Amino acid sequence: MLPIWGIIAAFIWLGIRFNIDNHVIAGGVFLIGLLSNAFAWLLGIIAVVPFVGPLIVKILSFGFIWLLNAVGYLVAYVAIRRGYSKDVLTYRGVTIALIIGIVIGYIVGKLI
Image 1 (cartoon, rainbow, N blue to C red):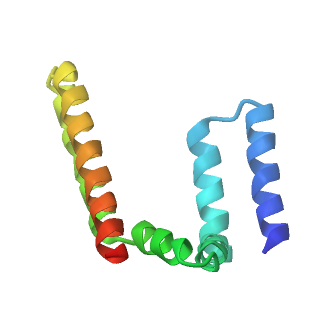
Image 2: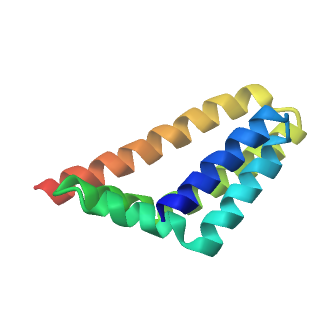
């Protein structure tokens, strides 16, 4: 998998070097990583780290966190379209604080 990650890094570097749109670079990296299972391999390497690694992998694969963040982006998009851009900053701050609190609570719960 190291050559695959080298290709991904080269793709990112070339994209930045030739001023390609960030969405195209992110989509290409996502597609290469998804088709080659490079992200699963990276999570496997992180999981090998004793005691902390499995916790990090479990948190990254915790679906509720991803769902909460996705709903936050959707609500923020609708609110910005309606002219509530200042309120969106407060809302996103509260959402990020909630996600961090859930993650910290999960880690402390696993340690105890």
